[in-house]
Structure formats: structure tokens, C-alpha cells
Image 1: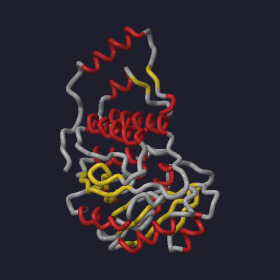
Image 2 (image 1 turned 90 degrees about the vertical axis):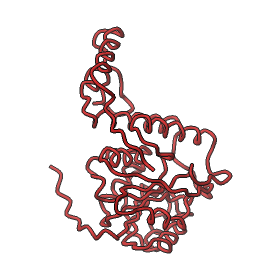
Image 3 (image 1 turned 45 degrees about the vertical axis):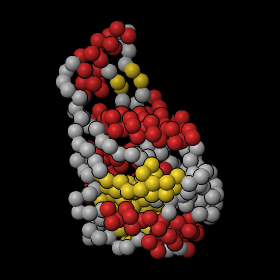
Image 4 (image 1 turned 60 degrees about the vertical axis):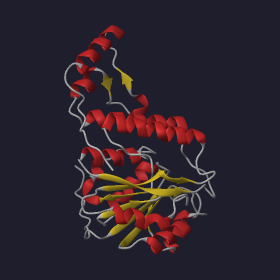
Length: 288
């Protein structure tokens, strides 16, 4: 049985900043200084050093961050979940350690976090991509994944994969998050949307990476993100018949497969039975 988390939570105006970092020694200092300069109500900055082989952790400590060390490298999702577990603020903010997001825009997200809002996303698609900040493949992939999320969850979000965001701590349960790699943003989206939370977006600017390289593997991680949003959608919808008769989600994402009880014809029949069993079980809501 998992021990109960006894971390003391702070008041509604407190902000915990969580930064996952892997070999970002050249940029982490500027990101942390920007956070301290532009975050009203800042309670703490937590840097999760995800098995870095450079001095990312040492630099983060020098700039006043609480450092959580993971070893070996475990993935962005694991790192951010560890940071959420450690955080004590009521508002959780996230920013990438590669300095592609502008800390000067932090107040835009916090000002939008009114009492009736549960998550604010810094949308690059509502804002600006500076030259060199995104490849054509990643731009197209982000558009596709966002459209798929909106189709599955009946939302109108413009940038579901943005890492720059603020979330009300009470809107998520870290024990129900399961992302390992870059599906963490989808995991957080699902947690808020399926909990009937209100999501809004503000325009932000995306700059090109100045140092290091991203660990994002376009097709592999894109497939993981897509499968994760599908799995979360049907696991939480109550359509266990769909999961049980058509898809087998009991295996890890990379091994998700169709059941093969008695051939393709049986699968088609089962699929039709599911579709005829009721209306699409999505919560019809719209987001600003």
C-alpha cells in the first residue's frame, strides 16, 4: 500500500514552479532567474534533474532551486510527476528547461488563472513561433495531435502539447498520472478535462533552442501521445465493453494490440456491437 502523502499544502496564492531538466546546464540558469523575476506569489522552484551527465543539478542549486535527482534518465513524464509530488503550492507552473519559453510571459498565465479556471495553457499557436523554433514535421504533428485530442474529448484547445502551463493543484491527482515520456502534457490535459475542469489559453512566444538537443523522437513519441489519449479516453468513459471486446489496453503502450479471438470478422462484429450500444460517451463542453 502506498504511503499517504503528508506534504503540507499552502494557500491559494502560492505558486510552485516545476522544471524537468536533462543536460540543460547551458540554459537552466537563465530559466531559473527568469522564473524568480517574473513570478508573483512564488513559493518554490523545483528542478527535477532527470539523470543529467552535466552539471545541471549543481547550477540549479546555485540559483536557489530545490533539486530532485533521478538516476538514470527516466523520461519527462516521470520527472514532472516527481516534481508534482514534491510541490507544496496550490498553483503548479511548468516551463521547459531549454529556454524556448519566455519567463517574462509567466504573468500572462497567472493573470488568467481566475478562481473558476483550473488550467491555463500557453498556446504557441495563438501566439508566435519565432524562426527556427519548430520544424515543419513537429508543427504538423502538434496540429494533428491537438485535433485528435479535441475530437476525442470535445474540446477546443489550440495547443494540447504545450509544456508552458499553470494548473490548480486541486484539479489533478498525481497518483492517477501515468505518463513516462512526452505524453505528460496529454496526461495533465486528460486529468483536468475528465475532472470537469475549465481550461483556457493565452498566446505565448516560442523561441528557437539555443543549446543542447531535444530527446523527443517524432514518430515514437507521437505514437505514444496518441495512444495515451485514446487509452485515457476509454478507460475513464465507462465503456469497459469497448476496451474488453475490441482493444486490449492491459499491456504497455508500445504493445497495445487488437484481441484476436476468432479472426477479423469477429473483431468487426464486436466493434459494431460497441458502436450500436449507445451514443458517443463524451462530455460535451467547450473551452475558451
